[in-house]
Image (cartoon, rainbow, N blue to C red; front, side, top):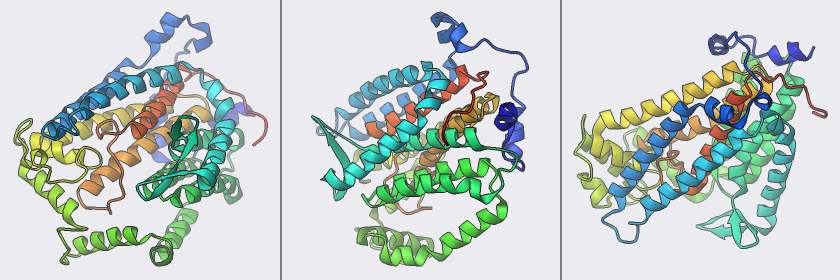
Length: 409
């Protein structure tokens, strides 16, 4: 029965079958049976090296974007140091047996949820948002922890409850509640980007678990129907301005390029001026003259596109594509539902940031402050990203672990 539960996945998911085709037939030693040296040798070092390469590209782009500004000249070095720390975090998380993460999933979720409630009651404000919780001498951002905690909790829930009847709606109601509660708290901070990330990763896992297509269609219709009330009564004024600017640009209406539309217009100019091969490293006009606000964070891709052209920007995205597919292959090789769902959820979280950032830079979605993982300056998303890949590495090392269902839900 337990084995049947672990093998049960979305019955009409085509790419799931493609993933499982990668599953090796030969048995592998359990991590507990390996010595430490063998465990290190079993790490997916190719995946790690690809992550290092992305961080190196980000460091170089940051150097080009900031070296003319004395106030920002130290950012590339800080970015490199933070990545070194995040790389250690990845290895530490990855070397922890996957069964430990299964047991820790619910405590991690509820502790993080309590921290989000603490932000609501005792949070520290900054930049017009209340997202940080003071813990002694430091302020932490629980919404970042929730991205990973939610993935692990959903993976554990479906590990315990997934059956061949997974298409039944009632099975998916608790996961929906698990997503809605933290998403509402994070949206109120406000942090629209992280809210979307929770829905993206959580929605992928619910879909994987076998949610009927007609239910998905009903949810999409309900979301579209609620768009206007949300815009009118839920969004903050500055958020409505961003949506108005986005719609105006899509429909070809005139926008104030000195205000709301300035950032996107300058980003398009930078991307267009890069052409196919780019102007050359440290030769970007938009980057060197600081025409693009926040070019070292959310709009770092414009620096790469201007200096290395379409080929350079596409090359970076192709590296990310290989990394994400590698993560999906690891998910498909896991024999446990928890391993599969945890790895896919982590891939979905990182993929959301990449896709949304690219779409934002191109003007295809409103600007909501979503950075490009490992490339944009900022330690929060970097550590979240590397923690996600730490879980993926843990799934890789424990891919042959047949995890028993845990007590509770």
